[in-house]
Length: 114
Image (cartoon, rainbow, N blue to C red):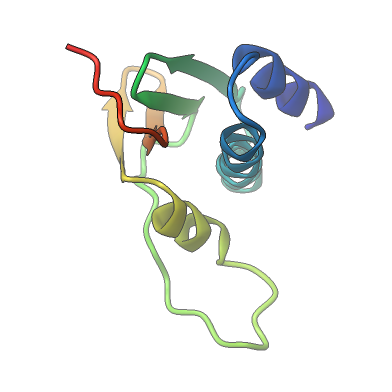
C-alpha cells in the first residue's frame, strides 16, 4: 500500500494539501477494498484536470461494490461509506478482467474549466 500512496501523492503534485490528503484517503480505502475482496491483481489510476480528480481502481472481481449496513462494533465495512461521503460521485463498471471502481473528487475553488 505505501507504493500506491506515494503514487497518489506524486500524481497530485502541485495540488493543495487538503486535496492530496483526501485523495490519498480515498485511494487507501478503494485499494484496501480491492485487495480484501479479490485475489487477483489490483491497479490504480489517477488523473486530474482544473476541476476534478478522477481515481479508479481495477480488480479481478466482476461483482460491484455495495454500501452495507454497519454497526458501531463492526470492524469493517466503512471504507466505501467514507468514499461515498468524500467524493462527488462514484460507481463501478464491469470490465473484461473484473471491474473498475471509480470516483470523482471535485476540487475547491471558484474556477471552472471550459
